[in-house]
Length: 580
Ligand code: ISL
Image 1 (cartoon, rainbow, N blue to C red):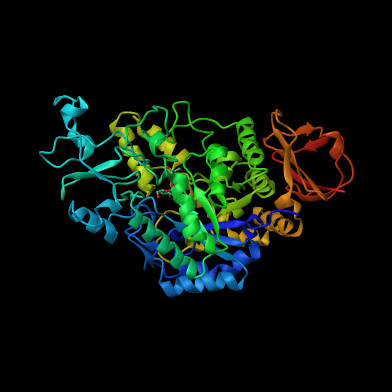
Image 2 (cartoon, protein in one colour):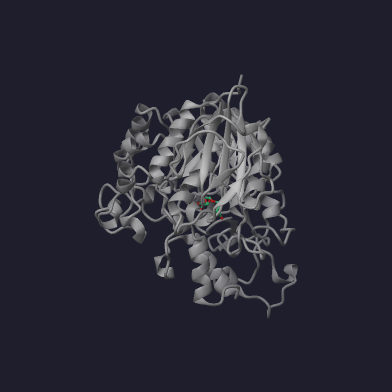
């Protein structure tokens, strides 16, 4: 009766290996460290692990700069360790999806080394090389020209081939002395973009994907996959409001659907694999097209931009509203109801912690973390949890830039300082606390020993000082913990199909602090009510849900069933009812 897929019924748990568990005391998490925690994941009740990149890499962007797609970074372990991880997951009926990072490689990848060596290299067109523009061509006078902006060698006075900007700040082009041309990098200069127009390159990628699938993995999370197609002639950006200059040209570029469906035909269609495409900017209509191309689902970020400031962009600060969150997520719920499938996520290794962002990480940390868990696990779609959210881990209280490791934060701060957009240390620190990806990258908090049990050595990132209270060991002992609540909801999802396949109907499009919705199949109905605020309120549910019902989950430990004509809701209260 439903269009069933294993990945629709699954809950994914994301592991950021550097910060999960260190088995050898070097301060960096590793694969044997994950293997030690497999029973923990099994007990929690998740079905799939998404592993952030563990491939050979110089680590400029913590592994998103890959030097060899078929080798494991020895910081993290060996291929044998990785095989043990895969087997250990499969033995416990869990699956593994790997990160596929094919918009770019590291500059240390052999392809790039050969590509940069000469204009005639057979690898030249694996990457995107262009000549610069002369000052005259660009209409820039000698006096106006600031060579330091482009990190040019002495004597070179030219501009990059176009005006595109890197997501990490500054021009997306770097001049390379070896051949006197520029190469494109939408991220760090040590992450050159691959040229998907080359059929040979595409073949190499498909072969590599097949190689991993043959090893037995269950799918891929595809990094910035909608950036891989760049338009002919690489025209300047046309939209000054774009997330970065040029995005209107290279986001969902002209051949994107051709490449994704080709990838599907050539590789993925031979396996029962799950794929999730990470998409910097994507609309519901685009998402539907990607599902026609054979992608299981995409990550969209509409709801993770609601707290950008009015100036726009990630390095600004504004306030999200319930109205914004509810209408954005509802648009996606409704838009993918008939076709397609949603992913659900409120944080990951690039985003602040969800309880700090959408909940209350002070007085109501526990309650609001549980409310957000309820939302994540009762909307329609495949939920993605990020390590630590199951114990309500929160943002790190940064007090200085010296605590920051992330290339994105450091580069963006540098460019914002250079351009005068951020003037004082206070402004910088406030934004870092609010936005830095490192908020999510502090070590996992296992127990209340030194370094939270993450390592016996010195952790590569400071541990959040709240680890003495917020840690797995304490949470497992405490019946009222966030952790217990996740376990409960995860088991409910296994028990009741309506959590997976029920249609979503919103009941409170305008309510100031309550978000209530139903999930309905032909034979069951869930009613979910969430009080998104630190004050109590009374809410009158729609008449057709009032009556006998079983209270399946509640973050205030209520025992009674039945939905009354009015519901008195405590601060951050969440309830899930199954109607009789
Ligand atoms: O960090 C961001 C949002 O918080 C984005 O600018 C981010 O860089 C973008 O969403 C793409 O992220 C992915 O690709 C990057 C890598 O640094 C991120 O960790 C990865 O998730 C480049 O590979």
